[in-house]
Length: 201
Length: 138
Image (cartoon, rainbow over all chains, first blue to last red; front, side):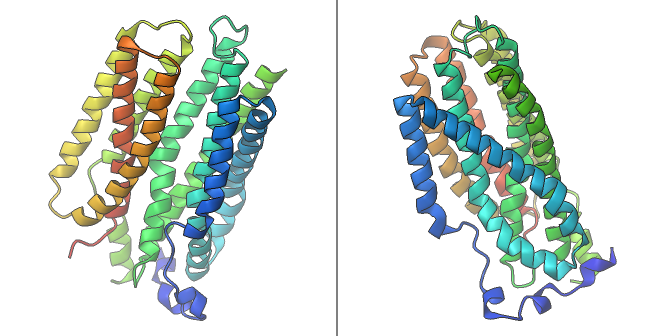
Protein backbone atom coordinates (compact mmCIF):
# COMPACT_ATOMS: atom_id res chain seq x y z
CA UNK A 1 0.00 0.00 0.00
CA UNK A 2 1.85 3.07 -1.27
CA UNK A 3 -0.38 5.61 0.41
CA UNK A 4 1.07 4.95 3.86
CA UNK A 5 4.33 6.56 2.75
CA UNK A 6 2.74 10.02 2.93
CA UNK A 7 4.12 12.17 5.73
CA UNK A 8 1.70 12.56 8.60
CA UNK A 9 3.63 15.08 10.64
CA UNK A 10 4.33 17.25 7.60
CA UNK A 11 0.69 17.82 6.93
CA UNK A 12 -0.07 18.31 10.59
CA UNK A 13 2.14 21.34 11.12
CA UNK A 14 0.28 23.95 9.06
CA UNK A 15 -1.39 25.64 12.07
CA UNK A 16 -0.77 25.80 15.85
CA UNK A 17 -4.13 24.07 16.42
CA UNK A 18 -2.92 21.07 14.44
CA UNK A 19 0.21 20.80 16.61
CA UNK A 20 -1.79 20.57 19.83
CA UNK A 21 -1.64 17.09 21.40
CA UNK A 22 -4.66 14.93 20.75
CA UNK A 23 -7.04 14.74 23.70
CA UNK A 24 -8.00 11.16 24.65
CA UNK A 25 -10.99 12.30 26.70
CA UNK A 26 -12.62 15.72 26.08
CA UNK A 27 -12.66 16.82 29.72
CA UNK A 28 -14.69 19.98 28.98
CA UNK A 29 -17.64 17.85 27.86
CA UNK A 30 -17.74 15.81 31.09
CA UNK A 31 -20.22 18.16 32.87
CA UNK A 32 -22.69 17.64 29.99
CA UNK A 33 -22.29 13.87 30.39
CA UNK A 34 -22.82 14.27 34.14
CA UNK A 35 -26.09 16.16 33.59
CA UNK A 36 -27.39 13.56 31.11
CA UNK A 37 -26.51 10.64 33.42
CA UNK A 38 -28.07 12.42 36.43
CA UNK A 39 -31.28 13.04 34.42
CA UNK A 40 -31.30 9.38 33.35
CA UNK A 41 -30.94 8.21 36.97
CA UNK A 42 -33.77 10.57 37.98
CA UNK A 43 -35.97 9.19 35.18
CA UNK A 44 -35.33 5.61 36.31
CA UNK A 45 -35.70 6.49 39.99
CA UNK A 46 -39.06 8.23 39.49
CA UNK A 47 -40.30 5.82 36.78
CA UNK A 48 -41.34 8.86 34.74
CA UNK A 49 -42.99 7.32 31.69
CA UNK A 50 -42.30 10.33 29.47
CA UNK A 51 -38.65 10.68 30.54
CA UNK A 52 -37.98 6.96 30.07
CA UNK A 53 -39.61 7.07 26.63
CA UNK A 54 -37.58 10.15 25.75
CA UNK A 55 -34.22 8.67 26.78
CA UNK A 56 -34.96 5.34 25.11
CA UNK A 57 -36.40 6.65 21.84
CA UNK A 58 -34.14 9.69 21.43
CA UNK A 59 -31.02 7.79 22.53
CA UNK A 60 -31.79 4.80 20.32
CA UNK A 61 -32.60 6.97 17.30
CA UNK A 62 -29.43 9.05 17.56
CA UNK A 63 -27.30 5.95 18.26
CA UNK A 64 -28.70 4.15 15.19
CA UNK A 65 -28.32 7.17 12.93
CA UNK A 66 -24.77 7.84 14.14
CA UNK A 67 -23.68 4.22 13.63
CA UNK A 68 -25.22 4.08 10.15
CA UNK A 69 -23.66 7.45 9.26
CA UNK A 70 -20.20 6.35 10.45
CA UNK A 71 -20.38 2.95 8.79
CA UNK A 72 -22.02 3.76 5.48
CA UNK A 73 -21.42 7.49 4.83
CA UNK A 74 -18.29 8.69 6.63
CA UNK A 75 -16.43 5.35 6.33
CA UNK A 76 -16.32 5.27 2.52
CA UNK A 77 -15.47 9.01 2.41
CA UNK A 78 -12.64 8.50 4.92
CA UNK A 79 -11.27 5.66 2.83
CA UNK A 80 -10.92 7.94 -0.21
CA UNK A 81 -9.18 10.84 1.59
CA UNK A 82 -5.41 11.33 1.55
CA UNK A 83 -3.56 9.98 4.61
CA UNK A 84 -2.89 13.46 6.15
CA UNK A 85 -6.53 14.48 5.65
CA UNK A 86 -7.67 11.19 7.17
CA UNK A 87 -5.42 11.74 10.20
CA UNK A 88 -6.67 15.31 10.61
CA UNK A 89 -10.33 14.22 10.53
CA UNK A 90 -9.59 11.32 12.90
CA UNK A 91 -7.92 13.70 15.39
CA UNK A 92 -11.05 15.86 15.53
CA UNK A 93 -13.67 13.13 15.40
CA UNK A 94 -12.46 10.33 17.66
CA UNK A 95 -12.13 12.19 21.02
CA UNK A 96 -15.77 13.28 20.69
CA UNK A 97 -16.92 9.74 19.94
CA UNK A 98 -15.18 8.47 23.11
CA UNK A 99 -17.93 10.27 25.04
CA UNK A 100 -20.87 10.41 22.63
CA UNK A 101 -21.24 6.69 21.88
CA UNK A 102 -21.07 5.35 25.49
CA UNK A 103 -23.52 8.04 26.65
CA UNK A 104 -26.01 7.18 23.89
CA UNK A 105 -25.68 3.46 24.61
CA UNK A 106 -26.20 3.98 28.36
CA UNK A 107 -29.22 6.25 27.77
CA UNK A 108 -30.87 3.80 25.39
CA UNK A 109 -30.25 0.55 27.25
CA UNK A 110 -30.81 1.72 30.84
CA UNK A 111 -34.03 3.57 29.98
CA UNK A 112 -35.18 0.71 27.73
CA UNK A 113 -34.70 -1.95 30.40
CA UNK A 114 -36.55 0.12 32.99
CA UNK A 115 -39.35 0.86 30.51
CA UNK A 116 -39.73 -2.85 29.75
CA UNK A 117 -39.81 -3.58 33.48
CA UNK A 118 -42.36 -0.83 34.11
CA UNK A 119 -44.61 -2.01 31.25
CA UNK A 120 -44.43 -5.66 32.30
CA UNK A 121 -42.63 -6.65 29.08
CA UNK A 122 -39.90 -8.53 30.98
CA UNK A 123 -42.50 -10.86 32.46
CA UNK A 124 -42.67 -14.27 30.78
CA UNK A 125 -46.47 -13.90 30.63
CA UNK A 126 -46.16 -10.87 28.31
CA UNK A 127 -47.73 -11.93 24.96
CA UNK A 128 -44.70 -10.83 22.90
CA UNK A 129 -42.05 -11.95 25.37
CA UNK A 130 -40.16 -13.79 22.61
CA UNK A 131 -39.51 -10.44 20.89
CA UNK A 132 -38.09 -9.06 24.16
CA UNK A 133 -35.74 -12.05 24.44
CA UNK A 134 -34.75 -11.54 20.77
CA UNK A 135 -33.85 -7.94 21.60
CA UNK A 136 -31.63 -9.20 24.48
CA UNK A 137 -29.78 -11.39 21.96
CA UNK A 138 -29.30 -8.56 19.43
CA UNK A 139 -28.14 -6.14 22.14
CA UNK A 140 -25.79 -8.81 23.53
CA UNK A 141 -24.10 -9.25 20.14
CA UNK A 142 -23.86 -5.49 19.61
CA UNK A 143 -22.39 -5.03 23.11
CA UNK A 144 -19.71 -7.66 22.51
CA UNK A 145 -18.73 -6.02 19.19
CA UNK A 146 -18.74 -2.52 20.71
CA UNK A 147 -16.79 -3.45 23.86
CA UNK A 148 -14.40 -5.85 22.11
CA UNK A 149 -13.61 -4.04 18.86
CA UNK A 150 -15.14 -0.59 18.49
CA UNK A 151 -14.24 1.14 21.76
CA UNK A 152 -10.68 -0.31 22.01
CA UNK A 153 -10.01 0.83 18.42
CA UNK A 154 -11.28 4.30 19.31
CA UNK A 155 -8.92 4.60 22.31
CA UNK A 156 -5.95 2.99 20.52
CA UNK A 157 -6.13 5.36 17.55
CA UNK A 158 -6.02 8.34 19.95
CA UNK A 159 -2.89 6.95 21.64
CA UNK A 160 -1.30 6.49 18.21
CA UNK A 161 -2.15 10.08 17.24
CA UNK A 162 -0.43 11.39 20.40
CA UNK A 163 2.91 9.98 19.29
CA UNK A 164 5.45 12.45 17.78
CA UNK A 165 5.48 10.32 14.62
CA UNK A 166 2.15 8.46 14.32
CA UNK A 167 2.22 5.35 12.15
CA UNK A 168 -0.31 5.87 9.30
CA UNK A 169 -0.61 2.09 8.80
CA UNK A 170 -1.70 1.65 12.43
CA UNK A 171 -4.19 4.54 12.17
CA UNK A 172 -5.61 3.14 8.94
CA UNK A 173 -5.94 -0.36 10.40
CA UNK A 174 -7.68 0.91 13.55
CA UNK A 175 -9.96 3.33 11.69
CA UNK A 176 -10.98 0.60 9.23
CA UNK A 177 -11.85 -1.59 12.22
CA UNK A 178 -13.77 1.25 13.90
CA UNK A 179 -15.80 2.20 10.83
CA UNK A 180 -16.48 -1.45 9.92
CA UNK A 181 -17.74 -2.35 13.40
CA UNK A 182 -19.81 0.86 13.58
CA UNK A 183 -21.42 -0.21 10.29
CA UNK A 184 -22.15 -3.70 11.65
CA UNK A 185 -23.74 -2.37 14.84
CA UNK A 186 -25.68 0.17 12.75
CA UNK A 187 -27.03 -2.60 10.53
CA UNK A 188 -27.94 -4.66 13.61
CA UNK A 189 -29.81 -1.62 14.94
CA UNK A 190 -32.18 -2.03 12.00
CA UNK A 191 -33.01 -5.46 13.45
CA UNK A 192 -33.57 -3.80 16.83
CA UNK A 193 -35.89 -1.23 15.21
CA UNK A 194 -37.97 -4.06 13.71
CA UNK A 195 -38.22 -5.73 17.16
CA UNK A 196 -39.06 -2.45 18.95
CA UNK A 197 -41.77 -1.46 16.49
CA UNK A 198 -43.27 -4.97 16.77
CA UNK A 199 -43.34 -4.52 20.57
CA UNK A 200 -44.83 -1.03 20.39
CA UNK A 201 -47.58 -1.80 17.85
CA UNK B 1 10.44 3.67 9.99
CA UNK B 2 9.81 3.42 6.28
CA UNK B 3 6.38 2.69 4.75
CA UNK B 4 6.83 -1.12 4.48
CA UNK B 5 8.25 -1.24 8.04
CA UNK B 6 5.27 0.73 9.35
CA UNK B 7 2.96 -1.64 7.52
CA UNK B 8 4.78 -4.67 8.98
CA UNK B 9 4.58 -3.20 12.50
CA UNK B 10 0.84 -2.57 12.16
CA UNK B 11 0.24 -6.15 11.00
CA UNK B 12 2.70 -8.08 13.21
CA UNK B 13 1.38 -11.28 14.73
CA UNK B 14 -0.04 -11.16 18.25
CA UNK B 15 -1.76 -13.87 20.32
CA UNK B 16 -5.49 -14.16 19.54
CA UNK B 17 -6.53 -12.64 22.86
CA UNK B 18 -9.03 -10.19 21.38
CA UNK B 19 -11.08 -13.07 19.98
CA UNK B 20 -10.81 -15.03 23.22
CA UNK B 21 -11.87 -12.13 25.43
CA UNK B 22 -14.74 -11.29 23.06
CA UNK B 23 -15.84 -14.93 23.29
CA UNK B 24 -15.66 -14.63 27.08
CA UNK B 25 -17.92 -11.55 26.93
CA UNK B 26 -20.30 -13.30 24.52
CA UNK B 27 -20.67 -16.24 26.94
CA UNK B 28 -21.49 -13.81 29.75
CA UNK B 29 -24.00 -11.99 27.53
CA UNK B 30 -25.57 -15.37 26.73
CA UNK B 31 -25.78 -16.24 30.43
CA UNK B 32 -27.37 -12.91 31.38
CA UNK B 33 -29.86 -13.10 28.48
CA UNK B 34 -30.76 -16.66 29.57
CA UNK B 35 -31.42 -15.58 33.19
CA UNK B 36 -33.30 -12.43 32.11
CA UNK B 37 -35.52 -14.44 29.72
CA UNK B 38 -37.09 -16.21 32.74
CA UNK B 39 -37.87 -13.06 34.76
CA UNK B 40 -39.62 -12.76 37.16
CA UNK B 41 -39.43 -16.54 37.54
CA UNK B 42 -36.17 -18.19 38.57
CA UNK B 43 -34.29 -19.87 35.72
CA UNK B 44 -32.66 -23.31 36.20
CA UNK B 45 -29.09 -22.29 37.07
CA UNK B 46 -27.18 -25.15 35.40
CA UNK B 47 -26.82 -23.58 31.92
CA UNK B 48 -25.94 -20.18 33.43
CA UNK B 49 -23.23 -21.71 35.64
CA UNK B 50 -21.86 -23.61 32.62
CA UNK B 51 -21.68 -20.42 30.55
CA UNK B 52 -20.03 -18.58 33.46
CA UNK B 53 -17.40 -21.31 33.91
CA UNK B 54 -16.67 -21.44 30.16
CA UNK B 55 -16.36 -17.64 30.08
CA UNK B 56 -13.92 -17.60 33.03
CA UNK B 57 -11.79 -20.33 31.43
CA UNK B 58 -11.62 -18.54 28.06
CA UNK B 59 -10.72 -15.27 29.82
CA UNK B 60 -7.94 -17.02 31.77
CA UNK B 61 -6.53 -18.68 28.62
CA UNK B 62 -6.24 -15.22 27.04
CA UNK B 63 -4.46 -13.85 30.11
CA UNK B 64 -1.96 -16.76 30.07
CA UNK B 65 -1.28 -16.30 26.33
CA UNK B 66 -0.64 -12.60 26.82
CA UNK B 67 1.49 -13.08 29.95
CA UNK B 68 3.92 -15.22 27.89
CA UNK B 69 4.70 -12.26 25.58
CA UNK B 70 8.21 -10.89 26.08
CA UNK B 71 8.10 -8.03 23.54
CA UNK B 72 5.05 -6.17 24.77
CA UNK B 73 4.46 -2.64 26.12
CA UNK B 74 3.45 -3.83 29.59
CA UNK B 75 3.69 -0.39 31.19
CA UNK B 76 1.21 1.11 28.69
CA UNK B 77 -1.01 -1.97 29.04
CA UNK B 78 -1.15 -1.56 32.83
CA UNK B 79 -1.83 2.18 32.53
CA UNK B 80 -4.72 1.87 30.07
CA UNK B 81 -6.20 -1.33 31.53
CA UNK B 82 -5.96 0.18 35.03
CA UNK B 83 -7.98 3.30 34.20
CA UNK B 84 -10.51 1.30 32.20
CA UNK B 85 -10.82 -1.14 35.10
CA UNK B 86 -11.58 1.76 37.42
CA UNK B 87 -14.42 2.87 35.12
CA UNK B 88 -15.80 -0.66 34.95
CA UNK B 89 -15.63 -1.06 38.75
CA UNK B 90 -18.00 1.94 38.99
CA UNK B 91 -20.30 0.49 36.28
CA UNK B 92 -20.28 -2.98 37.90
CA UNK B 93 -20.96 -1.41 41.30
CA UNK B 94 -24.07 0.32 39.96
CA UNK B 95 -25.30 -2.89 38.31
CA UNK B 96 -24.70 -4.87 41.52
CA UNK B 97 -26.65 -2.23 43.44
CA UNK B 98 -29.51 -2.66 40.95
CA UNK B 99 -29.48 -6.45 41.52
CA UNK B 100 -29.77 -6.00 45.29
CA UNK B 101 -32.32 -3.16 44.94
CA UNK B 102 -34.48 -5.48 42.79
CA UNK B 103 -34.39 -8.13 45.59
CA UNK B 104 -32.20 -10.59 43.69
CA UNK B 105 -30.89 -13.04 46.28
CA UNK B 106 -29.46 -16.49 46.96
CA UNK B 107 -27.82 -18.56 44.22
CA UNK B 108 -29.07 -16.28 41.42
CA UNK B 109 -27.34 -13.30 43.04
CA UNK B 110 -24.10 -15.30 43.40
CA UNK B 111 -24.16 -16.35 39.71
CA UNK B 112 -25.07 -12.81 38.54
CA UNK B 113 -22.30 -11.29 40.71
CA UNK B 114 -19.70 -13.71 39.35
CA UNK B 115 -20.86 -12.94 35.79
CA UNK B 116 -20.52 -9.26 36.59
CA UNK B 117 -16.99 -9.90 37.87
CA UNK B 118 -15.94 -11.55 34.59
CA UNK B 119 -17.68 -8.76 32.64
CA UNK B 120 -15.69 -6.22 34.70
CA UNK B 121 -12.35 -7.84 33.77
CA UNK B 122 -12.71 -8.39 30.02
CA UNK B 123 -13.15 -4.79 28.72
CA UNK B 124 -10.05 -3.37 30.52
CA UNK B 125 -7.99 -6.25 29.14
CA UNK B 126 -9.35 -5.64 25.62
CA UNK B 127 -8.72 -1.88 25.66
CA UNK B 128 -5.29 -2.24 27.32
CA UNK B 129 -4.19 -4.88 24.83
CA UNK B 130 -5.44 -2.99 21.75
CA UNK B 131 -3.54 0.15 22.81
CA UNK B 132 -0.36 -1.60 23.99
CA UNK B 133 0.06 -3.88 20.97
CA UNK B 134 0.87 -0.84 18.81
CA UNK B 135 3.32 0.70 21.31
CA UNK B 136 7.07 0.21 21.00
CA UNK B 137 8.74 -1.43 23.98
CA UNK B 138 12.11 0.33 23.68
